[in-house]
Image (cartoon, rainbow over all chains, first blue to last red; front, top):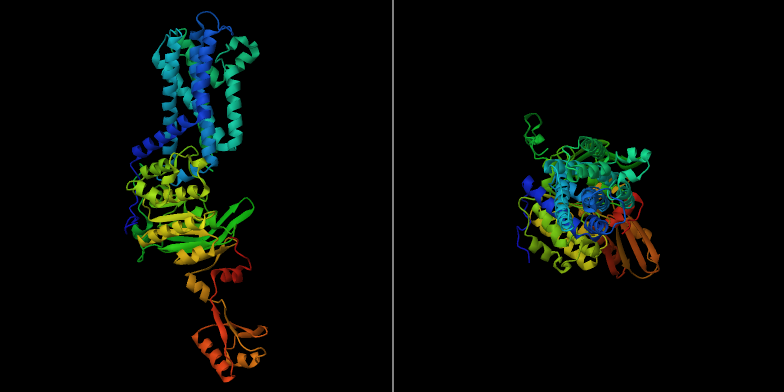
Length: 256
Length: 325
């Protein structure tokens, strides 16, 4: 059945780009195969966009509802993948020894983290394409500087990834599952995604405006709905969250 | 780390050059604590090429020792060298050369068996043929089933396949047959024998005596965080341990007279009428002494049996504990 020499040692790591590409492809497949993840990342943002654009339930201010909602739902899509989805998936990978086993493979830890980020970005691109197509079908007319939009999305992804990995790397997997979903729900309501922040009392508004989801949805809205240039305030808030979140994750993340 | 120039291994460094190549694994005075609990307590272990079994009861420090060699645990004190490398500081150099099978888990719950195996293969430069390995370990029947729905035996075999697919020099197997049925167990043993025959070294932890006896060139017995005995299964069974010779004859033989004919450190007793037991250094000479004593006394000994000590007995004598299996 086996010929002699089959297992003769011939060790060696694959080239680094190939390892990272393979890892990113696997991570993306795992994300897209998971039903609960798809509910968060695809179904909920799509439903919110379609529902609130066509039914006049909330006061979205002057102009078309879809022009108000699309930037918020794009922000929600980023949060669902970079924060909620990544936190839950990574939490269970840690719990089930996946991170531990990969740590003994030739793939360096930073390579694994790079691959995770690539998987998040690929998923976000798919989400954004889908939501953009739907938004155009609903009559969306975006404005503004595409570069500012990309910058907001990238900084938002960095901020949410840091916070998601911090949670996944420090809490038990079940606690991460519960907390990540709860945070998703709270930020969906209180982060200017579908409910404008000026619906809240003025004291709460000032605090809520500092949340990463508010900065991202507000920044995207400034650009896409009102054609603003660089929303520096919102970019600054996201940058602070990104630096603090990633630094804390790097410091406190436990692999087992 | 990978972008840095490769650090020369200690053996190539002029000031530390040694005449003999370094042992496969060299653990010196390893101490590892978790909180107040000392898991490994000044452990010394040298393993050479071949199959080394690390044997001990649950909680003896087997997994901590092996995980220190794999680079997962940073020693509180002492040194660990694997293939001449420090598993923590020189991890980037060591990891492509070793294969690791964890006691459990290690696979994405949504991944299929062949998908995960193919992935690990892609992380290596010269992996084994994945299809052949899948067939060899009977993983082909897993089909499109995801990891969380595989049976425990299938999960174990996948973990084993992941440890060998990168064609490592050294494979760590942490309780590779725990929970396997006899047939799957034998298949795992066959693979370990094939690895050994092809020049792959294996470190395996187990609390199954027969596994160590069947597979290992060298056995290290660990108890309470220390290696308390090490040697080939034959050496361990011979050394120190007393063997037993039993025979039947007519009741009421004069065991005191028999004992006088035997070496000084022997013991003889009539356990039940007509059933005799001699303990001591049971060798061909002793057997001849007993049978000639019987001949002189007109006794026809029947049911003569010599009981070789098993590792189980050795372990019991060394630790006063039963190995749980």
